[in-house]
Image (cartoon, protein in one colour):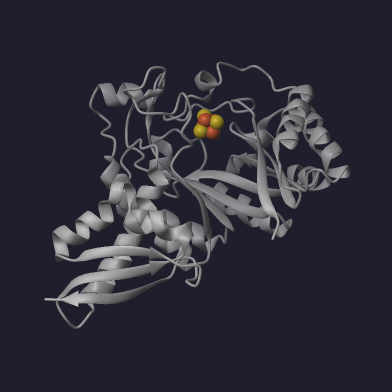
Length: 345
Ligand code: SF4
C-alpha cells in the first residue's frame, strides 16, 4: 500500500471577508500577506525533497482561509503550480478547504479542471441559531446545497465541525453529526472550540458570557460523535486542532490560546476513552468477578488501549478492581481486541 503524504500550504485569511467569533486567522498568520505561486512551488519542492518513501501518494492541501473565496485568477495561479507537479507525477492530487457559501457550479468546474480531488467544507454546526451566534455568515441550507453539488461533480467531500460553540449543547452536536452523515462526507474533522487571542470569543470569555468546555467535556462530546461517524463508515481524520507554536497550552510563552480544552494529545484522549468504554463493557459482561485480565491488541492500538498516561489501566483498577495487562499482537486486527481472564476472585 502506498504511504500517504500531505504537503500543507497555508492560505491565510485570504478570500475570507468573514469574522467568525472564534477565528483569528488574520492574526495567526500575521496578515493578509498573499501566498505567491513561488511560495507554493518552494513549499512543494521542500516537502518532496524530504519525503523518503519511494512508494508514496502525495497530496497538496491548501488549508486555512476559504480557498474558493480568493480572487479567481489567484486560485488558478496557485493551482497551476500544483498542477506542474501533477504533470510530472510527483504529486497525485489536491485538496482545498472552503466555506459552504463559496461553492458554485463554475467554481467546481474550475477545481475539477485543476485536479482538485477533495473539498472540505467548514460547517461547524448545522443549527442555524448556533451558526448565527458564531457569526458564520452561512446557513445549514448552504451546507446542504454545497455538499450535494460537490458530490455530484465527483469530488471527495469532507466536513469540519466544532464542539463547544457558544450556546451549543451536546445534543446540538449530535444532531450536527447526524445531519452531516446524511450528506455522505467521506472524511470529517472535529475541532473543540478554543478561545484564541484577539477574537470576539475572547471578549465574551472575559465578560464571562462564554464558558469554554473542559478537556473532559470536550473529550466526551468528541467521543460520542466519533462513534456516530465511524458507525456510518466515515473516516474521522482529525480530532482537535494541530498543536503548533501558537496553538498550544495557554501557559506556554507565545501561545495564542487564552482558554479552552487544549491538550497536546487530544485525539489520543478521545481514542483512549473509546477503548476504555469497549474494554469496560467486555469486563462487565464476563460471567465472573475478574481480578486480572490480559487484553491483546494490534500494536498500533496499544497506546490507545492503555490510555494517555495509563489512565485506562488506572480507571479499570479503580472502578472494577481489575488488573489489566495490555499485550500487542500482529495477529489482532486493528481496532479489535481479545480478552483473556487470568485470575478471578
Ligand atoms: S470563514 Fe473560516 S477563515 Fe473565515 S473567519 Fe470564519 S473560520 Fe475564519
